[in-house]
Length: 225
Image (cartoon, rainbow, N blue to C red; front, side, top):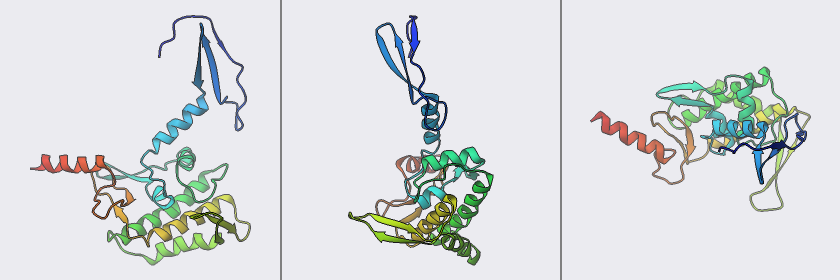
């Protein structure tokens, strides 16, 4: 959007709760007042868009941090910045840690890799390995909790047992969701070019995670004939 030259006055930036960025700035051009997103808001939106394939289920959002580009699997959690943005975008079973570091990145990937292999094995795409089961169970035992019924239908209340760190509790919650995902009959794998995501079918005959993947498969089949 182009704003015609005119005296411009920016309001005094308010301090953001987690840093120096304002939540928004108001720019006045002539008689028009325009709300301009702050850099913090812009970066947050860009980070969310970077994970736009996530499906809103903790176990799936975890394992789908490995994404197929063409026909090659590519790591999407390459550094701490990636982990931080994923924690903001993903569905999490418990609140995210306020701060993360390289150790947390390695710990998450150390759960993600066996979890991915187990979900693939559940779908007949590999072996169900004892070492992978042990890796997931180790995280479950590191932060045991009671999960009780809540006051409303579908609501549960979690009571941690012990004094585990926020990251340990998060890994245990993700491991619990991976455990539950292995029991679901609607678990599926999208084998479309450029996808390779694990997803939950919304209907029994669903082959692809979304319409765009189905379109790519049909195009590829047409080009192969």
